Length: 190
Image (cartoon, rainbow, N blue to C red):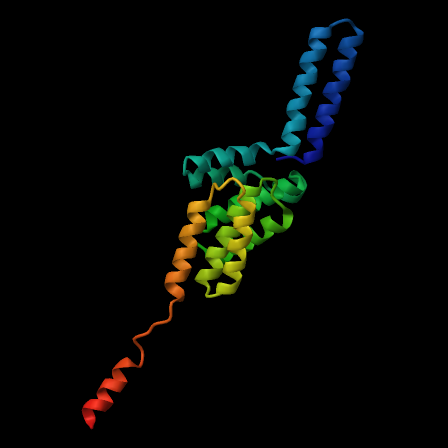
């Protein structure tokens, strides 16, 4: 994996060669080189390994996604800020299956770095809400769920948010049976 700025240098060199092709009268070649340089500009903003990891995750292939993400050795040099957010977001999704503490760190870092899509940010906050609720922090979980609801403008995660709220209500109901048997025992003793 090479530095993100190398992609821009390569794009600049290709554009320079395209201009040379235009001056020599090879307009078709120049246009082709312009399109080729756009590929490198696109890959500057959308990292190829992260795109391939997303494709693996869509197929529920966590091992394959991890292999693609592991090819990014130094994310701070290789990725733009938003892509660093997605790098941490993908790691959080994969680690959430096994280690909640580690997943929480990845999701918080992803939110801090920023995600460009609102539904991705909402999904990260919803995952954080589930982690906070499992760690017995219901106030934080409620806050994160309400933030996720605001971010989910298209209603993509409406079902997951509804299920999370129902689960929180079910577990937050106080147990009413404690102490009831004591009164019965005292009345029998008299």
